[in-house]
Image (tube, rainbow, N blue to C red; front, side):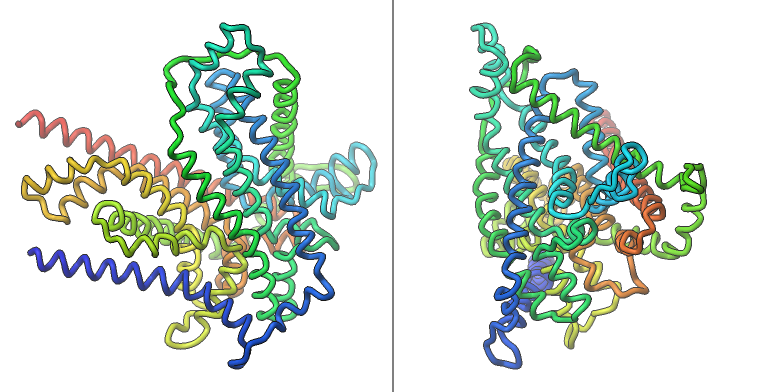
Length: 548
């Protein structure tokens, strides 16, 4: 039996190593080799665009910096606002922020066009203005709105754990709200603020859909690489553009790793007492102002999407209709079921791979797998277009010829969301009491039963979290699969992307609502299944105690 489990261990570890090398590291290296070597000769031909289009890099960094600044300031403001209000309202705001996270990446751009475009509801219909909504300003604003939700939730989570006794003591000594924010709250938030800024920069600089939709003549490296690949078929230049994008992303990712460790190792103190800071002061008022503006924009954004889905114009008048819902039949066909199937498969196997990798690293102490743990985090720091181009170059020839199949899409989205799974299970398995495992071994349990009864029971909630993230990430992804999905195998987000580019904004609004509802329904379904399993587990424990 021991030989059997040792053989099984070898098979699983070997499978993990082969998968991580083949589907993450190999595509990464393939982009570099294909860009720098053409027909066996070293070349810099792909970088020739820098002579005439060097402004693309400047545009990318310019947008990323300003989007990062806006995102960070507004996120901290929302955190301070939620820190000072009742728990019921804070839960409502957190729920709204979570809903926005399961939206397709270009919902903000769609709403922006409907509200502030040349024929926008606010600019044209209300104020009778012909406003040019396209350009760098629109890109920065829409990227910021899209980035704020996750950033704000991170700040809120950190503020939930800060030492409230320290704030109460400061208040009892006469400290004003401004002093509390500057001297207590912001210093303790600093590691989280750094992480928020770094993640915002990485996500902004890699975003290609927002500049494509509302950038107009304003282009970034990410959007240009898409156009170069799709329009010109110049995969070498597209690869070169993504390599240049990787340089600032890798540097910021290194800082992210450093600061994320600071957060995990920070002791925020006691959280037993409540705090009620005075709602006064310039800084507090500024935070309330920015939070209110953002929440209003969110309400306008999703209201415009819903309104566009159910209404249309005729002779200058707005009327209610279901025509757009009927019209999506021509666009979705089998796409909806394909999207759900891809999302379920990638969510399960991405979570399983993440769990097994961290199990062998943290519980079984297989030291060489730490190298592959780093490889597993690489998809997060790579632009989505880079990862997509890598898959085209890596798997368009034998022995692994899967271009044009459903398998290449599933593999891409599975390994693209793997960094989240590995992070979740790493933090979960680090908290397992090693004495519990040793006790199970002393009682005769082999590795299979330890994994089944100890590891799985401890990580079940985290597995559900990983599944939810994997499902929603796949349902809303665009960048990493836009190059590898054939027309006959499109998913909902790509259909929505095409519909927006063709100017059918009402139909796109219906598709956006459909994607959000699917993500919400399956997230609740996963949570319900986990609730049932927890109840069954409790029942089993109670029955076991009864007959002991």
